[in-house]
Image 1 (cartoon, one colour):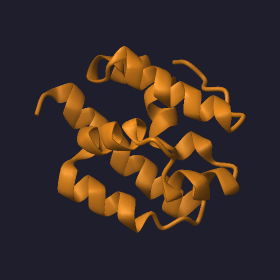
Image 2 (spheres, rainbow, N blue to C red):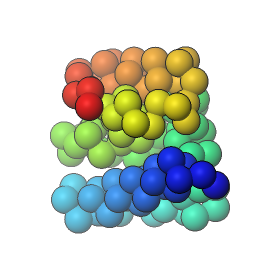
Image 3 (spheres, helix red, strand yellow):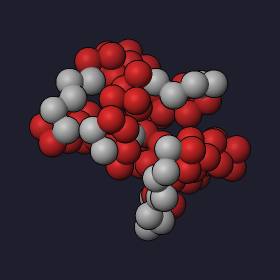
Amino acid sequence: MGKLETDFQVAMFEIYRKAKEDAHYPATLFLKMLSDRGGLQTAKFLINSKRESAGYTALFERGRLDLTVEAVVAENAKWHPLFSTDEIAKARSRLSDYGYTPRVN
């Protein structure tokens, strides 16, 4: 695993922690996916799913789409080399469908 992928994995565990602490959402399935698949494969799986995950919906209901995988990918160009143009567009589109405008860093 390269440095960028390792850093991305750390970012994925960080949104798990923030969702649990700040949004009071214990994303146990997300944590299991991270542990089993790693951060990058988990993100690709979730972004490429035809429907949003239950966790995405739970974070939407809490007003915290900023803690979704889609937001992390869409908002930080640092991660874009890890994803296809199509995957980044899917992440942005899902956020837009829920009224969230990503802040691009």
